[in-house]
Length: 460
Ligand code: PMP
Image 1: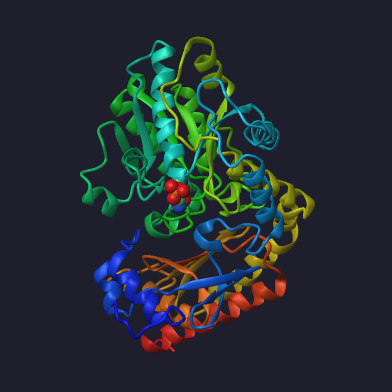
Image 2: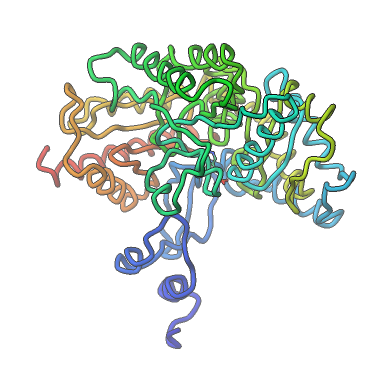
């Protein structure tokens, strides 16, 4: 470590970071070549501040999670009070704590009917690992022990542990760890812009649902345990499914007695304009993992909501479930989640996203559709995607997919806006408390970044 640098200087943080910190989803060598990490030091509302004093508009709510925005004293105080009262106790071996009980009761109330039981973890990934173990145990108990295979979609994201990454459909992740594990299958995603060809979006939705049915028939329904899908695929590029998709998928799951799992890690807690994405898309899942927005990201917490069929069997016939985490039902995380849900209710934030700020954000997003670089915009609630394409009519991509998206994302960062690039799709998922003037600012900066990219490509 250089002795000349002090901790007041960005260079000190960057140097220490590069030397010792292995980052998730980051090319460490590339990072060093590009001058090191951006160091975020503070945040308030929807604004981040970095170590250079720049203010950056957070169009991604951190990683799709800071739904109630930064700097909420109510959440900090809930953590402080709970830490003084009882900073930790576990929920193993017939023990509970008041926050873990209260949150369970609250989640049973606010989630869709029939989901009345909850198993806690600390991340979306461990929630999905829990589901794999729980579902296999369930089918054993239900005397259908051959039902073990999980079907998911290409490009799905369900987390980074071995089972969660196997559920996910990200080829790059699979490649680095010899995944998926046996027993995980992937089918077509309902991604009209890329896969629609001459079909209408609804025809494509049905085609994607039929891909599920065909796979079930190939595998044998007696071998398939569950289908898992995000109501809207998030990390895969904010893929809004055509209206035909989910009803058909649900019908297929029921027809073959396959459990339906809606991964609500991103869509839950207001993101799509309802408390849960299932309500927006008319899905009645058997199981529903939650994380991120449950605590607005202030502390790590996940919850697997389990419906009567699975929970009833586990409780009646399962005996001890040999599964759990030291931090399952952590009292401080649960107290913060309770305070976060209370805040959401007091500020009527879900209704606001559904009928006021959500439609406003979608209208602003739609204004970008006429930009020469933009092939399509799509969104729901406080989720939005901007597809960059060489040709709007044919939906032809730019050569070397990902380069244009990365260029535009870098311009956005320079213009003080965090967006994410998924290939050549730019996505936004802002804090749900974002005001109309802040939404204006977001799209002003997004358009400027698109213009700068277009100039570079000689399109403008
Ligand atoms: N499921 C979905 C739909 C997600 O988007 C994510 C994270 N982006 C996860 C699961 C994994 O959550 P975590 O990163 O908390 O493990």
